[in-house]
Image (tube, rainbow over all chains, first blue to last red):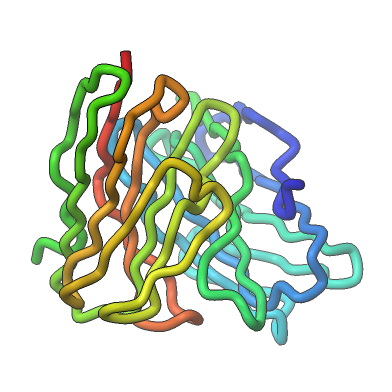
Length: 112
Length: 112
């Protein structure tokens, strides 16, 4: 059963606007969450992470929000740029886990 | 700075053939992972290793074997390839279980 869920397979946003990518998880033992970005024919690259002791982490145009009670996190990209067009994966790790559990990904298209 | 390097990048196998995928990292990471990515399925963990000489099963280990004889290398073997193993395979490594993982560029394997 999928423990990390990204329910939107795709998202289209205009350049300059905000992109919001959502992720839900079911395992309450997850305590570390990451977002990865993937371009075609390349491996995923790390974007931003957040520990369960925080509810927000910011890095430039990228901000991740964590709502533990709702088991929900989101990635905000402001402002969105055409180069942000990629597949974004949400991932989570538990306190006793060694590997990441990934969602199915959301394909973001930023149009000029 | 090479990071994580996967060999080969592409391969076509006939059903029943065997092959080994090589992953090499130059970051002195303890943890290494093999994932597979299938359309609509996200990344699923096949096997992982928490140090030289150790391996463990992930979510989808059947049909695969792994070895970690040297800290920098993690090999994924297919003893008797099946069409269901057609996929893109990603190797990753991380410094610790709480650090982000770095991915290779992927190996696209087709089994006919």
